[in-house]
Image 1: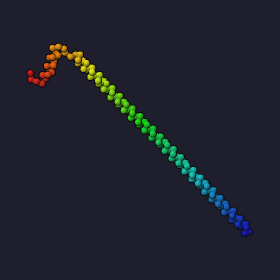
Image 2 (image 1 turned 135 degrees about the horizontal axis):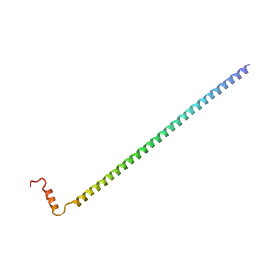
Image 3 (image 1 turned 30 degrees about the vertical axis):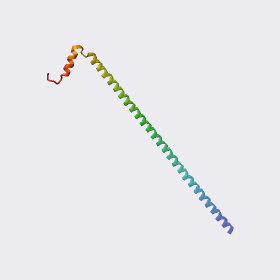
Image 4 (image 1 turned 90 degrees about the vertical axis):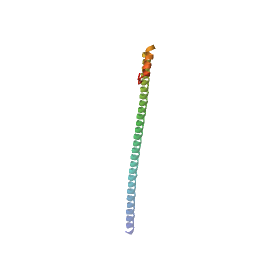
Amino acid sequence: MFILEEVVVVVVVVVVVVVVVVVVVVVVVVVVGFVVVVVVVVVVVVVVVVVVVVVVVVVVVVVVVVVVVAAVVLVVVVLVVAFFLVAEMVIANVVTAPRGPERSENFSRIANVGRNT
């Protein structure tokens, strides 16, 4: 009987050890799996955030460049139109300017503006 009791004790100890080892392994696998899932989710979220930030920065840079180019083009167009308008006025004044004695009369009238004559 004594040997049988020892065998039962050994079997019980072995079963308890095996159950504890299996439980520990399962817990470790679940914890490691959970950690891996969390790490994967965090990496995916970080990658998505980085991609969104890069896209937003690129869109902002493109919009700024387009606005600056449009402003420069607008300024150039305004300057060219103003130049041609001024040139047209100067040409019109030269063409319609009085000739001969009328011209000298106009100049003397302009020179005497504000004077008591």
